[in-house]
Image (cartoon, rainbow, N blue to C red):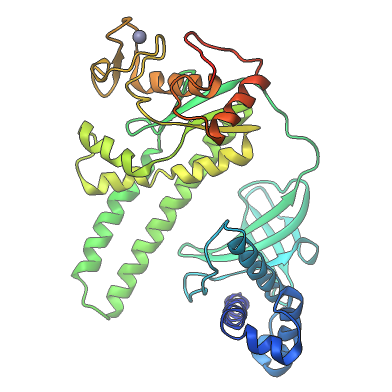
Length: 383
Ligand SMILES: [Zn+2]
């Protein structure tokens, strides 16, 4: 598997280099442009020449070329950065078509997958495979090899309707406008403490020594574990939210401000804690909501924590403490995070109230408000 991944990385890097530095010469020599098809032809020549490349299955290499082609397409379309070389130890992965592999269930905990040229490999099952199997990706993480199956599910995704606002906070990671809260799992903080002590061990070890290398590996394993816990939590939370509400409204993300707010409130004075907040993975959660929820709306985040959800008054003094919101104008009292979540919900449903400007985002919120039958809260106006 390491060989398969290593050759894939080599093919990617060679193909990237060819596209970046030698495309003019290639064009002059062959009259063709470098693209997926012509680079696959190049791959055939490469495989004919080198035994160690021929020794591993061809599909993952072709898929690497396809992925590179896609990366270039995205870069030209302005959707991503310029493709970067893959690095040893960091990008150890290869993937196969679904039709090339076979998956069997051994028991509730274990399954096995047949990889071409490698054979049957047992894996720890985390869930059932649904729909038709389209691809399998094998990647090396600091915790070992991991397989992920991409499946195509037929049929429409059910839209439960309704709308919910989400406030992303420090004390509570996710607060919904209906009062449901999702806290980051405790185990994450426990692992964070282990990371801190493992990092101290690294700093005690001599540079370039074997023991230092091992200590660094331990930190990497703990980090990978943290990422796994966080991702699992994010999947559970977002799946539940998307199954209950059709429209999900969040603030447009400004991670820099999040940490600043935390520092001001005295919640996180230590840099480590600030980092833990950044590590909640807002971006990951947003990405998950974008594909799980029927609609995702992003609204202007300005003053959402100081705005009254009941009368719309914006006043810093309304924020009695980190936890309590008490409106100075109408006396409305609520949990501060839930108040903010309701404010966000209102902003998503009533465009043009507090949202400055008439940009593209506002146009989108108008559309959402219509599709919801426009449950306009008090003080609603038109943009
Ligand atoms: Zn009020």
